Length: 166
Image (tube, rainbow, N blue to C red):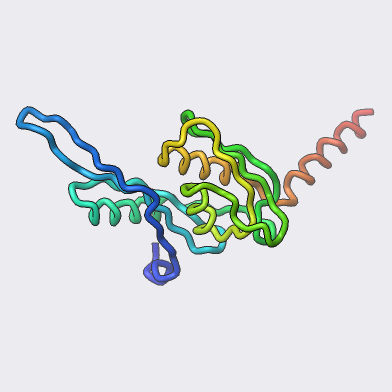
């Protein structure tokens, strides 16, 4: 990623978890940090960094999030249509909202929507509330979005084929 883009990216730590691993000599304490970054204009990414120190885990999370950024299709300040993202036992329903509604979402989904620059959206998380799974389910939902004109064009193409066959 070019250096000029690094200055434009917003970053937010979603969750920090303390993790212990039992070894032969005792327990090893480490941390993992779930981080989201975005440019506030349709690009967002999440990353999970793991390290012995919290600061290092956050740095790694930001690095991984930068490598895993996706573009989100937006219609004005919302999404073009309703989608459902699934990862593991977590499900997230993302619905477009009228102007002025705001971001109606829980902590994890809200952070990702804000980093993506979405101002008006309705969401509901179903199933597991594990932060990592919710974040991945939200990204899955955003990846399902196509440009607003594509679903209409695809439907028209299919309709034309049926008319041609008759």
